[in-house]
Image: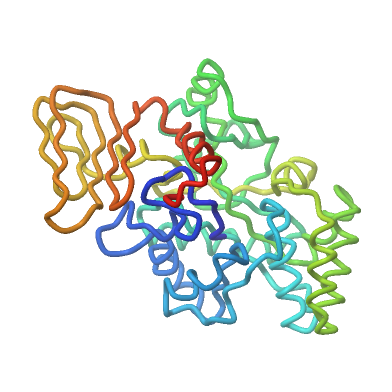
Length: 359
């Protein structure tokens, strides 16, 4: 999945250059390129599909030449992750002669994942679980802090030490929404909860069966999309797609099903969700500053500075400040307190209202 509206990492990200097309966690690869490199040893590149918004299709096709142009799939309109996955599943059925035993591995283009070999081992286990059982399979990361910005997955067998268990699938007891600090601390100390990584694995037949039980109206639209795509009537498929409710797959399906398994992630994981994540994904200096590009810092602490202006025409200097995020692009500058980085999209919305060209 590689959609996005280019808001949370403004001013580097833009409507036609969202975060998966930025080099945020690597000096040489964008997040999208990292994602392809990470899974390609396990999944042949000709079987890797990139799901994105229709307006981003040309940019995504030019972002990684390893991906076949026809494997960049644009959704007709935005319908959240449920729409994304329904559209891709329908495309797969249309391409593979309605073979519902096709196994989908749904990964993301905007996460930082360590221990690449271990990651692929976990994906392999999740795909085998999806192939061998009539279950929806997800993946959960081991919490390392009392994070309030993530959803949590409760593992059914609370007696297990998930950190010492071999990689295998466990039954899910339930999903928990983003908690407050007190509850997040309880989740962390209990050892019974995982962060919801937003990765999914299933046979398309199981996806359709579970949709029929949980959201029959979505299953009915899904079947119409498949039939229209098989008849080469993409316009009719797109009209059917537009009828879908815009809702995440977690709310629409995972939280309503009693046939969900989770594979605990035995690798390090971080959702690269906002500018403050660079403090976790890049090496800080001795004053806990993360600096990308050229900048002068004097008496600065616990800040993130990203100078992407390029060339020698724009100098960036900070003096006597702390806990800031400063991002300099060629045509825009962001200065924010680290505690407010989730509100960057509010600034973008205001710029859009002013019809600014820098969005």
